[in-house]
Image (cartoon, rainbow, N blue to C red):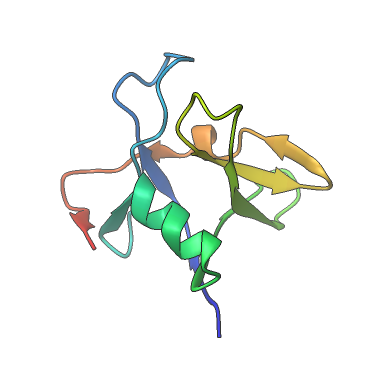
Length: 101
């Protein structure tokens, strides 16, 4: 059975760089963060699902794995209504209180 976890924060080396990927996703109130590679593995295996809440609609927006042309590492992005979007990038930075799980 797939468990679902709400993502409320991210870690990215340079918040404004379009060339750097999110390195961790997490939840500030749960005090956890998960490395990108572990999140990808959990999503691919259908062990866990991760989502954000769209502030405009209040709906869950699930995190998916995007794979490029084989030259780039897979990365995380939200997917809703048949489109990839940037809901993850709208999350705040994970704080020092978030421990890696």
